Length: 448
Image 1: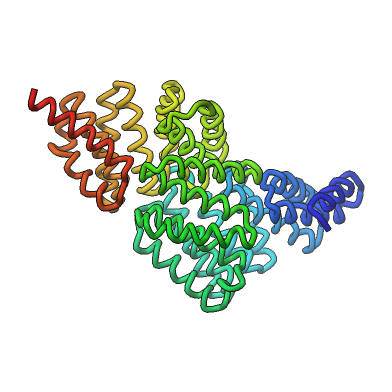
Image 2: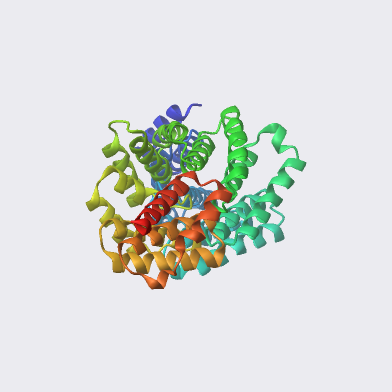
């Protein structure tokens, strides 16, 4: 049965008095929509399934209805946490209710999944909740392993790896992901290009990128892209294209960055991967500006706005949004974004460093030097503490520009000299060009 056909049947039964059949039809249609994937449609169907199942349970529904409600909550929690097509508050409510249902049914496999999704959703929120969310996610791995649910254990372990990376625990993140990949490859998943293997590769690529292992991330994402096309898996296709766009962008290879970013955007829009919009949209906007290409600035900024307002997720694709707002020249949007970053207080030290560096850059361009100094100083301190070299280099270069504009002894005497070796080692050509221009200007001023 096609996804369109199952959706029509679900619509038909949901208008009838046969509530159990309507619940079953909505559940199947929701699964088919997620499989396509069409995340917004899947959310709509699963939300209706959950609501109807709760009504039936209140009227004395049996365990079959309870299991349907459980599956609906798992899907809603997963889509909310990973793809931003369901609000975090509602996704958290679904995860909490799903845990109750799983415990009532004695379903340890579903409970392990929900523990992870609840932890993931919690991590995405306020900084103060990060440790609690990570603890839930780690508990999910332990439960799945104790109960013998090997596939679930691997699936949630790779998710925990991303949480580690977002907190700057790069060694643990890479080790966790590598273990899952090795286990899958030993079991023949690479040859079969299984969905679990292909999606785990995407997670692994993201961990490499966040860890500043850019050469490894690029090589691996190139291979992952081929796997995703072969599978086919459009979600991973989008993710691999985004990783390739990010590395090209950081190396000032703007034509390639734009090509990959636009490809990622096309897929993200078609599957309503809201969280996946902001990263490639920002890269595309800045790359077009760097290449002197006309148009599309407003479209890209609108996609960033859509993603940041409704698609906060583990994908963490907000890193270059500030540069996009500034490149297009929308100062009001840039300032609103800085305020949004302050209000959100993103959990995880790497995300905190990204946010502080962005705030510092925006405030620098706005001439609000005291605010810029505080944000840049914080970004440098956090990035240095966790070894996030590319963020450290970017913040130091902003600090050097700030020092050129005014006296800022709190940032140290030579932030530029701290940035240059990192830029050269990681081949951060975009940042290096900015640093070299700044150094040349400083030398010229000294000779004058």
